[in-house]
Length: 237
Image 1 (cartoon, rainbow, N blue to C red):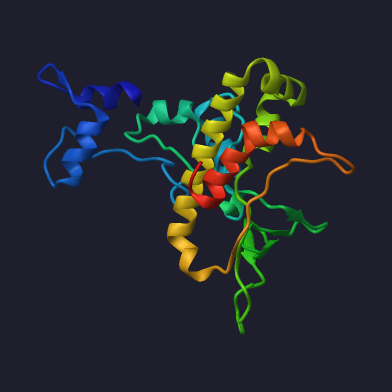
Image 2: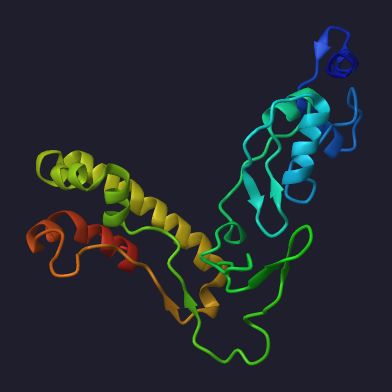
């Protein structure tokens, strides 16, 4: 099948790229053939069982599953399948709230990040509660959706390494803190552009203390961490 498709795509010594083919089609112009899309997004993607069955049918080794939509049970199309059918598309994805249940119950039901209770049925999940149904005269909070500069640095470098960095490799520590802060601000820009006019409280955390003491001294906080908090909360260093 792959050789047949490749032969159809080779015209007068020129092999049209997938991007060329798709752009021509989207502009209502003739290409060497109709573009192929298989499992490009969660709407036309495989469920886990369908993917496994298709791999067996094609004689491919079973691949690991990368969940793209928990409630729908869809998974990313493996590269081997995309290559075999010569799909003209590849996909990039952003973390989505529906893929990250924080509360899971014994019957398999879970609460997604929006507070919707999703209950398993035969092939997928159904929404069984609607958190904004009825009276919604409540204060609205935008929940934490990214790590604060210090805690994210501790997660990335490890406690011993990052705390040592603050004393012996401050340029490295500040470069990491700066990049995390830029990412946090960018995420909040996107989030608040969408919901900012509707929320009363915006939540952002960071990890500065243990149960009975601060992780770092006030002097180290003032010197290295405070300016990143000011950038996030006040919009200035």
